[in-house]
Image (cartoon, rainbow, N blue to C red; front, side, top):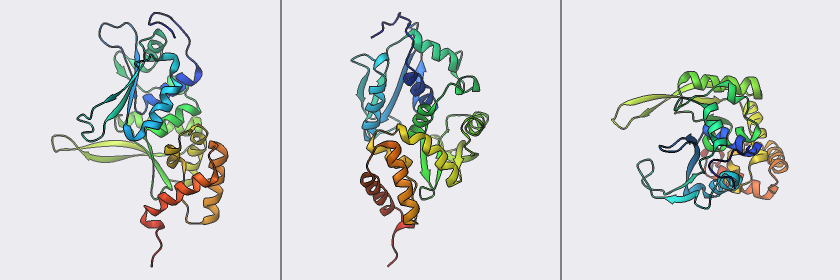
Length: 258
């Protein structure tokens, strides 16, 4: 394990995970009195399997005290959170300087071009959702400006061949007023499939499989998608079929009319 002053090149997978998660639930910060950056993220205890999958991928920047249970707070007064914080390392400072302007996180093509399939997978698993009866998708980019979200949408098209659009959502603020945010919308099932085929090989946690399972009313199309995802993830067809049926049972569009 490197010390906080030792300059060690990070593995490709660690860098990829960090870059993807900076667009989602992760952050890099240089804390007061520290020379180097730390990487941190947290998830609800409901996502503990996903949380510990990430932790297992980050052993080279972790200590024995890098993760702990955090009591419910203002963001979630019901569910406790699992929190991870890495060692403070020069190699993380390099990524901090690449992705920040001063102390402000800035999305730029300069570092987006360093992302790979794992980065895209982590971004989607962090902040992506299937919508419209699991036939379309949305990536929640609420923390970014409209210009940044448009940059991310262009990046998906130019680098990954995935067409998307940028559209607003309105949410209430703490003071009772409404605030507008911008999200990336994938409004075509064909474009969604392009994204999920990139993500699926990196889904190693059963509880996250629902994020790559498009739902079809046509049983033949459904079976084809289940078989394709099974071949990419390594999970059995039976496991995937069971998740599909559970998801369909919760959606009115798939419930049989009596």
